[in-house]
Image (cartoon, rainbow, N blue to C red; front, side, top):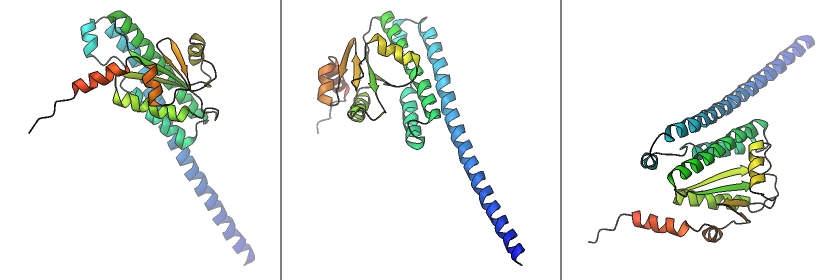
Length: 227
């Protein structure tokens, strides 16, 4: 009877391990599929961005003004990337790969806007925001919230966010071009680099056109009907 008991315990143990392995494999495959889907979406947007400029380069500035020049998916992808960071960790290798794809998309979008601006003689309100996830930037999270608020209030403002420590040559080239110091957060507005700006008052001072955007927004609001 003892050997039957041992066999029974062995079978139960094997069943538990097999079930645990199956569940672990299932969720790992689901996670991988989710990441691959986002990665494919970002890759598609990279190609779309290039194709978009090819089309717009043949259009008149009047047509470009009516078109959505910039990728409409960037904010959505940023939210998905933030979700993946929270779910799997900011240092997860697959998450870092997704961040690299996303950073490339942002740079393509930034260059597209500059080329269209040069073609049509307009001055965009664009900012390059450099932050760190290494625990050495106390103000980065607060700055990120303020920038999110600004883009929600003023869709004309484009913010391109880059991890200062990411191992991506294109981002390192941006850092070298603007001579960004490792004094984060750092925000490039026009040709000027601003360090440590983390509140709305600081950005209002750093962005000369912000008051004009406020006036434009106020003018676009429908007038209240008097009773």
